[in-house]
Every structure is written in structure tokens, then in C-alpha cells.
Amino acid sequence: MRQVSTKDITDKVRDLCISAACDLEPDMSTALRAAREKEESPLGKEVLGQIIENFEIAGAEGLPMCQDTGISVFFVELGRDVALDGPLYDAINDGVRLGYKDGYLRKSVCHPLKRINTGDNTPAIVHTSIVEGDKLKIKIAPKGAGSENMSRLKMLKPAEGVEGIKAFVVETVREAGGNPCPPIVLGVGIGGSFEKCAMLAKKALLRPVGTKNPDPDLVQLEADLLKMINDLGIGPMGFGGRTTALAVHIEAHPCHIASLPVAVNIQCHAGRHKEAVI
Amino acid sequence: MSEPVRISAPLTDEIVGKLRAGDKVLISGVLYTARDAAHKRLIELLDAGKELPFDIKGQIIYYVGPTPERPGQVIGSAGPTTSGRMDAYTPRLIELGLKGMVGKGARSKEVLDSIRKHKAVYMAAVGGAAALIRRSIKKAEIVAYEDLGPEAIRRLEVVDFPAIVVNDAEGGDLFMQGVQKYRRVS
Image 1 (spheres, rainbow over the protein chains, first blue to last red):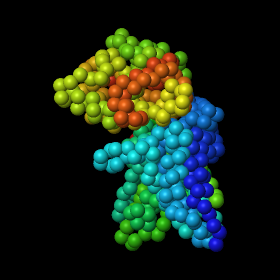
Image 2 (image 1 turned 30 degrees about the vertical axis):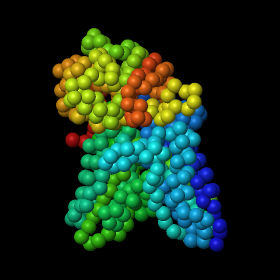
Image 3 (image 1 turned 90 degrees about the vertical axis):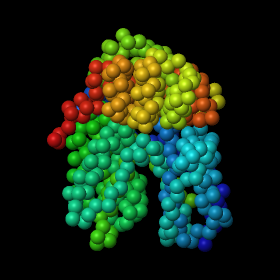
Image 4 (image 1 turned 135 degrees about the vertical axis):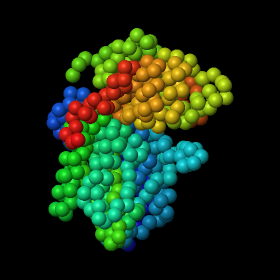
């Protein structure tokens, strides 16, 4: 067993909260720059220019790139040979509390009905999986509400098949229009169960933007969906243009013979994710 | 890309009348911030027959919940939030003289009807461009609902605040026009 201190986890999580809010990862910035080169709409090009200038300012000045610094979502891979000296979730929440305070990030978490803000952006949403090894991997993917609110899940009939999936995904993006801050990245979860496909959709967003699913059938579906979505003409911020989505990432899982769950999780252009290994 | 139109806020009928969907604008003057919870309270005040905490005539409301400012800073990062969440409250404020709104995303039919009827304008800023937009905000003070934190109503003084006209007083709609132009499907 390898001893890992929860204090280390808290410190790492604090830093991850701040760096995720202020520094866009290279995969997103490369994709946005490529999109600006290709965009045909002059207004769309201008918007992409402002988006690029914005993340450059944010990175250089250590400012949050978006005022919605999101609800804190974590994917934790806990090696089975790791021994923790305290409760994992408390350590993560302590890190969020510190990060959102020290980084001057917006606290956006409240009671769902009373709408009273918890004041420190906790509790975080944490998804944990147990893996081989003696390491602890923490991925943070803070999520703003503009894009999260436009996300959807539907239980299709198996007879609806691939065409049904395409229609649902494209309709979700069409109805979202400019709200989720396009250009977006689309995470699509297919199969599993009601909750599994939502998880898959979100997990798909963690892949570096534009990386393909290893399954050739899904690669084709990813490419088809990306074309269909960009043919909608929504464009940057919904003002019209060719760049509505930068990529479509699909993750699939076997499902019940009577089911075909599909979830679409929309990621805005501020696709924030960071990871640390302890 | 055409040059931006410089406008001053509060707005007049003359300024609003000149703006057309698709225009790039640079706003200088005063903006008031308000989002979901603040709008709810404003409407509750009106329902109770009370006065609003600021004179709304001619004003622009900017839908934003900024990040906290660091010591010595005027404001934190301050990009627009989704305007559609304010649709239920907006026509009532336009009737009272609200002339402009800045946010992101599309508005309801009721809001668009009200914009045309009362000669107002809806503008969008680039969503997420919070560090960039912040540079145009020179002064910020809370005027109401401090307890709402990021959702408090703030009076902002801005210089060359960048926005794009989405819905003008003549019924022009950038979202419809722009998307139609680039759509490749029926």
C-alpha cells in the first residue's frame, strides 16, 4: 500500500480549481484558432477573435476566462493500492472551498429549491472509479450553467436506431442555438442505462478535443453528426456561421434489449479541464 | 466587417432607432447589472406597488454575475449570462422604460414583441469573454440586493463595452438572419 495524505489532495484540488478557471488547455485553444481560420462569416470570425483574445488575457493576467466558474465536477481514479489518511470527499471539498476563495472565483452552488448559495461552491460533484495501481488521478471539469442547461437525455426506442440518435442530437443543438456559447464540443453517451449514458456523455467531454473514439462505427457517427451540426448554420454565439461545434465525442456502452438511452452534454467554448496525479 | 457604432448609455429613442440587427456597438456610459434573483425581486417590488431601486427609464440592463474582484480591482471577470432566463420579467421592465438589454442567447416572442412595441433594443456580448469585457468596466458599485452576491444589482460605468445588436426596434433579428444565411439544410 502507498500512503497518500488528504492534505496533498486538498492542495492539488485548490490549484486545479484556479488553473482550470484561468488557463485554457492547448487542445481547446488550438481548435478555436483553427476554427477562426476557417470561419466564413465575418461576424463569426470576429466573435472567435474575441474568444481567443479573452482566453489570452485570462491566462496572462490570472483571471477567470468566464464569470461562470461553474459547479466543480471531478473524475477521480483511485488506485486500489492507495491508502488514504482521511475521507476523500472531505479532502476534495476542502480544496474546492480554498480554490474558489483564493482564486476569487464565483460561487455558483445553491440549494435547488430555496436557492440559498452555499457560499463556497461546495459540495463538489465527484465521480470515483477504482483502478489498478498506487496512484490517485484527479480530473476537474468545472461546468457553467449556460451549456449544461442545454444538455438533454432521451430514452429512445431501439427501432429508432442510428437515425433516431442523429435526429435527437441535432435537434438538441438546434434548439440550444446561441445559448450554450458556441462553438461547442458535444459529448454524446449512447447505451448503458438512464444514468450511465449521462455519465458517458460527460466523460466524453474529457477527451482532448477532436480525438476519435477507437470504434470505427462510432468514428463515422462522430463525423456525420459534426457535419450535420455545422450545417445548421448557428455559428459562433449563434450569430450565423460554419463553426457551431468543434468536435463530437461519443462514448457507448451495452444496454438492455428494450432500451436505447442517449444523452447529449454540451460543452461551451470555455472547455475547462485539468488533471493531476498524486 | 463593418466598423462598430459608438453609443452612449442611458439610451434615447434616437439612438435606439439607428441600431440594426448585426451592428457591432461600443457602449459608453452606465449599465445596470441584474440576473435571475434580482429580476424576481424587482418584479415583487412592482407587484407591491413600490418603486424600483434605480430609475429604469432609458437604461440598459446587463445580465451578468461577475466573479469577485481582487483587492484593488474594480470588478472581476464579467461576461454575459443567458438572457432567456429573464424573459418572464423583461416585458414589464420594458413597459416601464427599460431601453436596452445585453446578454447572450435568444429571447422569447413576448420579449421581441415588447422590444418592437416600445422601441427597445436587445444586444449580445460574446459569452465567456469575461476577462476581455472586464477591461471596459471602469467603475462598479452595488445599488441594491448586496445579499445576492454575484446577483446583486450593480451600477457600472463603461467605456467602449463591446456588443452586437441582435434584436432591433424594427423587428430585425440577427439570430434568424445569420443562421438562415449559413444554413445548409432545409
